[in-house]
Image (cartoon, rainbow, N blue to C red; front, side):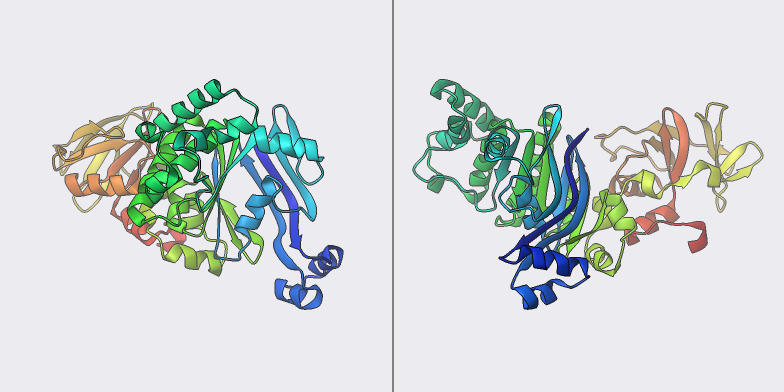
Length: 397
């Protein structure tokens, strides 16, 4: 179900918006519009759908328009043209045209924001900072403190409830900001580079915690970042912006494997593809495997083959005529105990990093099964392409 629907959205800052929109329609650049009208184009012709429960990362370099788009979602930035629909129960509210009362309702009950600079009130305790939004909703002191305490426990800061912001580290302050946003129990969270001011180790820990919290709470999150590794780590989908435009929107693996232009390709070139790629994206499908009588050939050099039944279940494996053992691997299992010459079967959603480790331990390709049926394999060729961040095709052979 769609949580946020952005359609042909323009955000222009200045006093000559109508003239600037006309210049945009004529194909003028941001700089040409600044020169002509003095207006700044923050977002141009943005169209994107964000589904309930997903983390959509808006990313790009400074000035690309990502924060301008984010702040339009809760009405902090004026919408010059287009639609920005946000779900309110069974209805969609157009933030571009709603009245002041509806805007207050959406900000109070549907949309919460986590800022880069924490935005904690220094005169309030940690507990009261978390409860502040609930106070604005008119919730009684006892109830709001109970809800705030629950969220502090969730982010591991219950013992710090009576402290003040200056007594906390930067990472702890950001956890308070997260707890405050979650305490509002809003459907949608807007997060404007919330971890960028933190040390790398703390930043990585908070990214992990956000992923864990999202799995439990299933919120819809729009997350602004200028760091592609961060976007690839936490994003369900990524929208890359350049010069106020969305130039590519898709799943992290799609962004890495199929950058839409040279700008995106430059971004991808500086990231580690193993942090995002999954077996499904790079596997050699079963119908591409060579057949030898009733066997499927995994490696012709040493005659490694497998046999499957009519249901696609792997029933036997051998190398140079000698049987090989089969092992079903599950997410989270330790691979240290895997013996050489074991053929490991895993889900197609296995991370390429994990699959490479299995290949290193066993010296064999990794079999990928879905619903107990073999769908493909990961061989050395596929691992090489994972390291390069490229999808192997027949034409590339």
